[in-house]
Amino acid sequence: MLLELKVSNFAIIENLHISFKNGLNILSGETGAGKSVLLKSLALLMGGKSSSDTIRTGASQATIEGSFDLSKRPDIVANLQAMGIETDEDTLIVRRVLSAGDKSKVYLNGSLSTLNSLRDTVAPLVELAGHAAPLIEMTGQHENRNLMSKAYHLDLLDQYAGTWDKRLLFSEKYARYNAIFEEITKLESDAKQKAQRLDFLVYQRDEIANLDLSPGEDQELEIEVKKLKNSSRIGNFVDQAEAALYTDDDSAITRLNTVLKKGLELASLDPQIASKLENLEQAKALIDESVYELRQYSSKIDADPQRLEEVESRLSDLRKLQKKYGSSVDDILKALMEMEIEISNLQNSESKIESLKKEASAIRKELEALGADLHKRRVKGAELLAASVNEELLDLNMKGVTFHVNLEALKELSATGLTDAEFMSQTSAKDVKRPLAKFASGGELSRILLSLKRVVGSSHQPRTYLFDEVDTGVSGETAEKVGRKLKTIAKGQQVICVTHLPQVAAFGDSHFFIQKSPQTDSVAMLVSELKKKDRVQELARLISGEKISKTSLAHAEQLLTEAHA
Image (cartoon, rainbow, N blue to C red):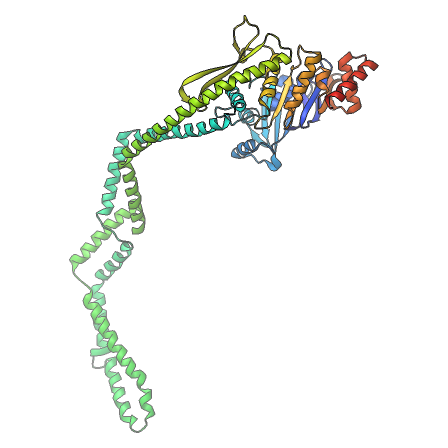
């Protein structure tokens, strides 16, 4: 819903601030008061093209700003967030700044954006999947993009025929169907490159596997090389230790034995000495054990140069692998595992392709059956839709104009099924059916959209509808019917309607009056919201012109009372 519109220095608008309401908002005013300028500013909020010619004389730039309530449009919020635009309190503020030289800047919630992003967010044409419903739809002499969109036609038909859920199911299956073929194409593409990749991976795998590595082996080899290179030093140390501790005449064990012998001789004189010698007995045992272990360890050290050469060679081979695949054996083994997985995938790609083709074939059968069912339901829905819209058009006094829904069964699958839909019209029985895109009258287009919305009902995604010229060529009872239909459409949504008919204006939930304000060297436009008394005055003016009479005032009172009864 459009909450506020602020415009400054745009055409004849100097400063304008309108707070729109939910429901039916009426805009009326004298001929030439600037209604078209106001609609042009709204069109700019929808991504319309700008021109520096529209900047108010004497100003350097023009600004158009609109504030939208997104509380009931989570789809728009999600799109903005995907673009990195914050949406605090479910609000979108669109700002267009027009400068000299046809330079224009677009801001979405204060973030500099592009015109395309604005169009895609606020007023996109409905996408094939039907998910990009606009925030604003405008109809009139120059703005009828949605009625010209065949995708939009199919959207309305599916909404009316109750086939929306089936269509979404079809779209999901169709997306999976296309994804499968993309995967198949990827697997089949460049078979030569795939073969080369497989050969390269097998070579790398074998290069690693041939070494038959074990976790932590690099550290073990480094320790062994050090031991082998220093075996003589280790042997010398063991010999010296054994001599110093055990075999020399003055060894530690010899001295301990001397001390223990003398101590035992004195123990007969003083029994406590024996207990004091117990630690020395333990020291002797520890020395014996240490000397034995050193000798055993020394005997196991292989000083064979051939073994050293073997270990160094293996360590060298391992270092080469480390340069290619990782800084440690664990990293190399991890790389080996990844290679094995990729090799398996490449070797099994043919079976994968066959499996995907079978899945695609099964999904295609489902799509063809679902598409045929969708088309059948749409054909029935189209007949009823056309009949109902034509009843509405007769009710709106559009005699001779006949609405048609042209459906063609597609030979190839599309994202929305097997149906091509287009709204057509005939101005007389002798005239040929023509696409609405070639329908010239903005007023007739507006009334066709009015009839469609009346028949189809409220959108599944609330939005703002802008109706211009919807009352062109109608009066009296027909005008009242237009007003009632607009009132119906506005339930749960927002309608902004420019009108010059009192019968239509009377049904408004809010009424805004547009007028020119002469200034010393220029003209400005003013817009004010009318309260009860002022509304009666404006309706009376619309009834009788500038000379308001008691009769027209009474008629205005009656119109308001009946419209809101």
